[in-house]
Image 1 (cartoon, rainbow, N blue to C red):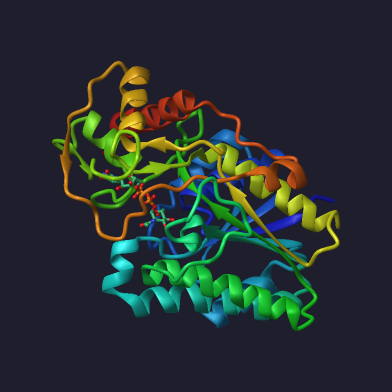
Image 2: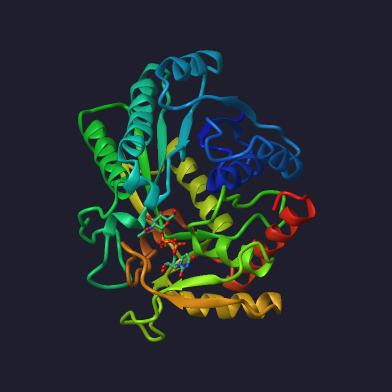
Length: 344
Ligand code: UD1
């Protein structure tokens, strides 16, 4: 019988791509999402790709009664991949309590319900933001955790600690924490992708919206950093590669491949690419010159960070493989599809 996985935040950006990968691998997928930052139409996109409609329930993970009712209605869930969270750094500075409530209460509810409903494993969506500004790159999982620079970042750190403490207390669950670097791109079919609501905060949606004429120009935040071209450096990882890592992590937990009850992995390519380099590659791939202006630094930005993904490569047998050109082409194809559908 197919194993059942609950994906919280499954209509969101990384969640929806992971649902596709899980379904294609034979998992039965159930999604809960409060649709605060995503659209129900994503379910149609997923279904067009996989020809399998995932179960969907509009539930807010902070609503304990709603969550318990969900687990009662759908017994036999084997594992959970927990994406549901608020993720805008700037907003978290303005609305810290919203972020602490959403991101922390959601996890507490899940952890409390897991043993009650005999759910064995949790894959948790964390971020390289827990490392802050690294002393050296590439950065591996043993690098120190730096004080968070935003409430959003702090919720990721606190959630990692909550999982650690809970497992340490003898809770009968296993967890894999995945620290993502910068996920970009879309499913190659352009049936699903990243759908920012309002003005995008992240680089690639801003680039594609500029290229298509929704934004007059991209603001490049700073060219006076201590990097070869002066712009910040990131580890941009294709969202499909990232999604596949979640499948491998879930398999690992449910097939009992590890003796450890909690493991942490960096998910990146191992290659640092500057903001200006990324723009060049985008221009090459699309054949469109991008209108951009260099402006001042953005507060809270890290100068440079890229992953040492060796642990994930070796232990999970997973590797980010998609060339950056292909990833940016998928992001552009998605933007064109949004235009075609009259969404943006
Ligand atoms: C940010 C968060 C990270 C979070 C991730 C996903 C910080 C320090 N990190 O990553 O914790 O997990 O978003 O939500 O906030 N840039 C521009 N112009 C733009 C937009 C971005 O030049 O219009 C530059 C930024 O200065 C940065 C790079 O592009 O150097 C990447 O920015 P972004 O896509 O926002 O991701 P991060 O800031 O790396």
